[in-house]
Structures are given as structure tokens and as C-alpha cells.
Image (cartoon, rainbow, N blue to C red; front, side, top):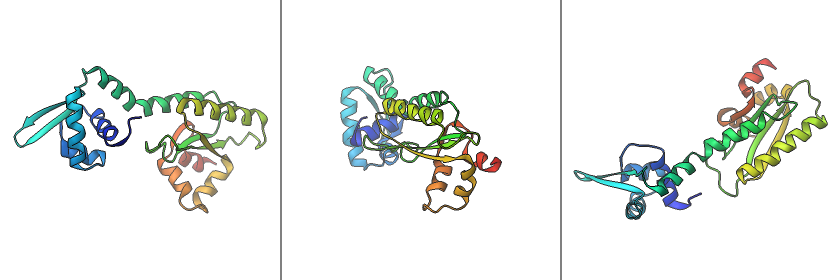
Length: 198
């Protein structure tokens, strides 16, 4: 939501209440120390960040009493609140999916405004592939998820019976192992458990 170096530095400062050096903030934000110094100086002027000299180092922290800092903190918590909302919506899918998993850049907190939200929907064993209620409910969730996030949803739909084979024989590069490793389960059973019971 806050682009560039400033957004990255603010993100780092919002995730901790402890003071840190500008060099540490730069490293955690993935920017140069010079870029971080320029941004932090401006944020100190605006009152969002406090700066305290400690010997040869300067320690900085987000000023959590600042009004604008409240908005920064709310944005920092946006990922978790969005995932909770998506999970709430997933519980409304009937018939329920065996598993509904977000993966890719959104799961890694690396999504941009142009990113799709990659979602694996695993159909329960008792639900036929062409079941209209299942397809309608899944389509309704996809539509709602698009509104919640502002990003298009890319659905990958498989049957529960296919999961063990797909995890064992990954013909699409590392896709299935990536889904298994980084996926965030919104509803149903995590893939590893699902594969063990299928």
C-alpha cells in the first residue's frame, strides 16, 4: 500500500516495538543503508519515527503514539486480517472443500497490485467434479475474495483422490511441493494430512 523504500522501511518498523539501528532496518527492508537513512530522516521530520543517538549509532522506532503511525500499523496487520476474512468466507462454501489453500506471492506476503491470488481448491471425495452446488459455492467464494483483496483469484481445482499422486509425481516443476511448503490452509485439511488419509 505504501510503495518503494519508504513502505519497506515502515513495514520493518511496524513489525517490532524495539529500537533498531538504521543499518538493521535497511537490511531487514532489503534496501541500502543510504536509502534507509534518507527515508528515516524524512519520517522523523513527519513525527512517525523517533530517533535516539546511542554512542556512534542512531536508534530508530515507529512512534506508536503518532496518529499516522496508527494507519501504518493497521496496514501492517492487513495481511492477517485479510487471510482471516478469506478463511471466514471459505467456511461458507457448501459442500465444504476437503482443503482450500492460498499459495504463491500472496501466501509469501510478496503480492503486488498486479498479482493474482493463487488458490488450490480440493474437492471432497463425496462431491462429483461437475456438482453444481460445489461449483456455484466456489465461484461465489472466488468473487467475494476478489472484492476483499482487490486482486484477481486464480483457482486450481482438483479432487481429493488426486492429491497423493500430485504431491508424489510433480510433473509441473516444483508447483505441488511449493504449494505444500508455503501454502496457507484457509479451510479443510492441510495437504500433507489429506494426502496421508486419501
